[in-house]
Length: 136
Image (cartoon, rainbow, N blue to C red; front, side):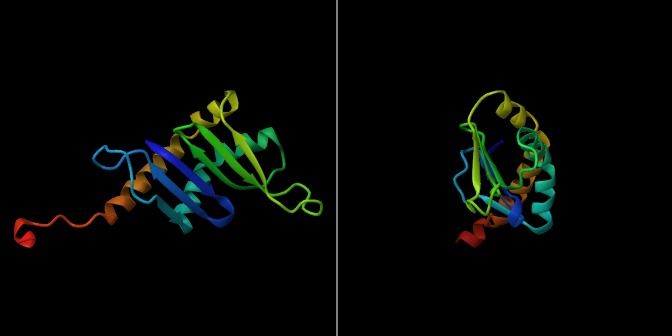
């Protein structure tokens, strides 16, 4: 399971925080970052989230989307709709309700992709187990 993730669409960067480590303990290490093609695959798998947000407000340009599964909560950063009047990005926050539940239900394939990528990256970080001879 995932604790959270953030799709930084504008930056082609994804941050993943698993709920548990390989032993099933609460995850305490740094999150996993995906960039380049790996990030592009994750962002493409997150299209159902973007589609749901665009259904609420057609024409929006999404910069980033994060989901916290523990709270649960969705935060999305959008390009400003009137940059001449106010150039600051806008933020959308969904804490509960049918829209958030529908979005969370649509994230299954994305969650699986992110969890697999996180497990691979974390396994690559792990030091090689030492034999008894190496420990001495």
